[in-house]
Amino acid sequence: MAYDVKTLKDRAQCLEAKASLEAELDGYQNRDQNLAYQDRREGRAGASATSRLATATDRVKYLTDQLARPDLAAADRRRYEDQLLTANYQKARLQNRTADTGGAAAFLADVDADQIDAQVDLLSGAIAAVQAHHDTLPA
Image (tube, rainbow, N blue to C red; front, side):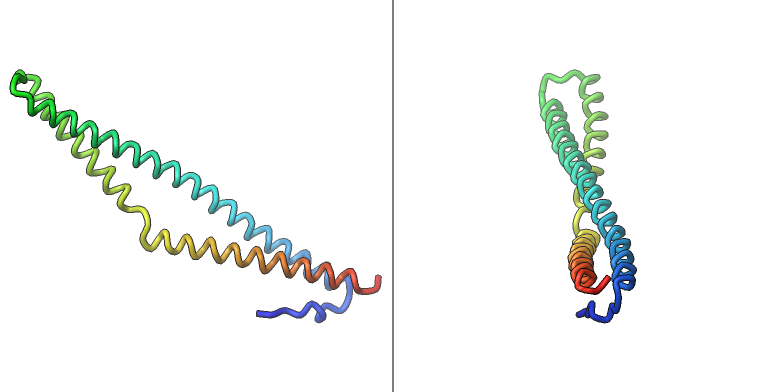
């Protein structure tokens, strides 16, 4: 959509339009910062879940290996079996958590980020155009 800054007839109208555009730009820049913060936070959480999943997988393998030993005492076998049940449960929960990433939510977040970037570019251009027009008008 094209806009024509020549519809602004005097400096006061330019200043009013510029102030309104700057306020709107502040809102979009704030959203952009919030999305960037959320991305950083989700990145840390995703890395943490992936790391914890690797640890849980290693734990399951270790316990399975221990249970495969032929010389294992009955008490130790029961303890390892109980620990393996818990480890498998934790591993399954972490697998579900890491599998939930992406999909529609990730797609919509990408669309939202692109929309914000486009709005920031548009508003920045409009502010520059209004300021340039303002500077050509008589005082």
